[in-house]
Image: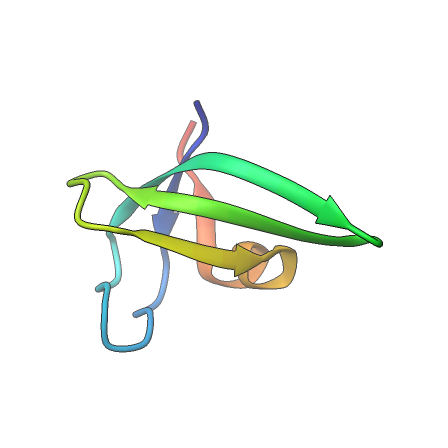
Length: 60
């Protein structure tokens, strides 16, 4: 399972440095989206491919 680290604060929910797992990805008419689960299991977020590349860095 791929693990990511947040490199900037996510609006009003998660702080910089929070770790996430990619639990699902999907593509519909060329638009990719990903479902991320926080390491502490607090919640899930859905991000686009662009957000994933700009706000997260892979740690494995």
